Length: 316
Ligand SMILES: NC(=O)c1ccc[n+]([C@@H]2O[C@H](COP(=O)([O-])OP(=O)(O)OC[C@H]3O[C@@H](n4cnc5c(N)ncnc54)[C@H](OP(=O)(O)O)[C@@H]3O)[C@@H](O)[C@H]2O)c1
Image (cartoon, rainbow, N blue to C red):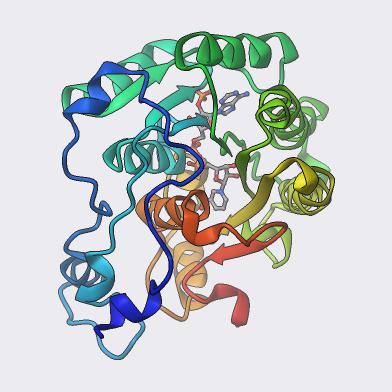
């Protein structure tokens, strides 16, 4: 038995509870449902500046050929138009899911959705402000009207005002609380209503290592991310009887627009890197792989958990 067969013996990677037809036409165009990082070993080598991976820290060729078949599933990703959310949206689309992305910049979001559709992905964009209940309900309703159901909700939208506490304005503080915390609550309420009625669903909330470890000028941000983590644990309890699994992904440092200002400071970048045992920053794709796992039947018995996708940062 090869390694892959051992790991997944008895686990079917095809959706058992979501055998519904895809509702966006482009899904039919996807015939390959392999995990996006087919050539994972090569990817790791590129990340490491061309140095070969060693030991078990890098992914093996076996893992690279694990398949995640998400055909028939409808996945809503908040803040899916760039950064980590885009990586997650692309990964689900590549695995055959119908993806609904929502964020505030409609022009940019529609352009990204069109690009993914051109590559064969079944992606819809709907303008969304997660901090506004009316907007959240409109997003949910548009998705349900066209797709009929939402199987997975990824609460990814988030903002970070990197400021020392005494420099932070009330508006900046409100924005982080409203988007990072209230936004997750509103989206869970709106989409969760449909999931409770369907007695099935997966919710994946994006927290951060800042929820539990020190980070530069991130006092309020860290508090919002800790709030999401505990909210997810409580919600996992509340909705377990409804067949809804709620888990949290806590990424480490992933260079995106969110942290471009700090990544541009060589000393800060160096401090961040020095704390990562795997010796490199994360990528949206690193986070997306774990999101696929949490949405898959391989995670059927997993709820109320947090997975740190941080290159080992939390161990240091
Ligand atoms: N990058 C990291 O190192 C890192 C580490 C740990 C955790 N995270 C978390 O990962 C998530 C994604 O971060 P990222 O690095 O990908 O950030 P990013 O590149 O700045 O993207 C953030 C996304 O959220 C959307 N968004 C912001 N406010 C929104 C709102 N009110 N309603 C709807 N969408 C909104 C943005 O689109 P619009 O501006 O167009 O609305 C954008 O698509 C965040 O929750 C962040 O806290 C990031």
